[in-house]
Length: 362
Ligand code: COI
Image (cartoon, rainbow, N blue to C red; front, side, top):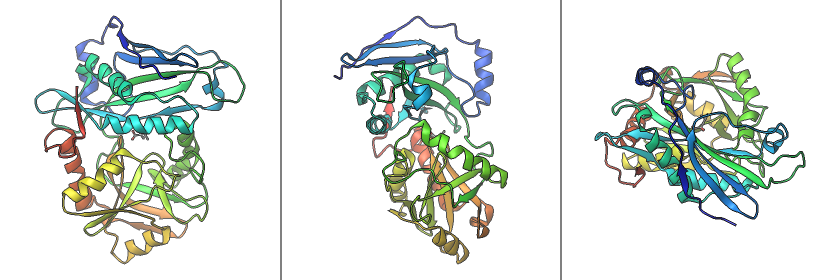
């Protein structure tokens, strides 16, 4: 049963003193500070969604036998709210995140939150904590993290009969401390992130947990990020630990096809259109590790970049794999990468026309 909850406003918590907030907003980092409130909505079998509330940000109290702590039945999203030139605030494609949240829920055997409730919950939190949305002009934004966990208490392995949906918010600067400085990539040829028929296309914490060891190995090799290949042939490039990839061939940008084992990123999808708006060709295709190396060396592959809500667009510089290492764009941010980055950010910050109707005003 799906009932759409109304979200009740609870009295405000005491907000941080303005000076503290201003200091945080001046250098927010990524995922380090959280706003004053959160939204919570419960789901119970036989009752559906209920008890939607906007409450002060604070700890969740969970029984140690709560299902999610043992079997990881959890999904999440990431989207951003941007301050517009007139001082108002708008979120970027919240409907796309809401639909992906439903798709992740289906894969994890969880209830689907109605799209309009997902958007209402995000809107309500941003409106309440609007002073936490960074000023217009820079690249900073308010990052929203909706998530859902199985809250049934018990150790039986089965879809839970109770869930909690929560939205929290965090002012965000660059995900990588270097900003647009190119990141280095370790191409993992043995560890895989996801398998066909698995849950690689769901945004669930388990996929990120599965990426951590290879990420640590990448760091040990002096790289910022790990890139994964497909699990069957160990040949086709899939994605990074938490971002999609794009390959730039002169005037054409290519991103790995959604085979079911990689995440359908909202930024990835948006760039297929933004590229065409700028006069580039864009397509989805399979890209092999050999092609990546050979085309970089023969100069046809001119740039590579990573993309995601948190990372926006981040150029790739050095690439390392078992067969050696090479540099994209001489280790500098490429021209197409930077143009796409600017064009996307301009839409999000309200500096360019929203021809695709992606911005959602509050
Ligand atoms: C996002 O880009 O929103 C993500 O969820 C990725 C995560 C690595 C921060």
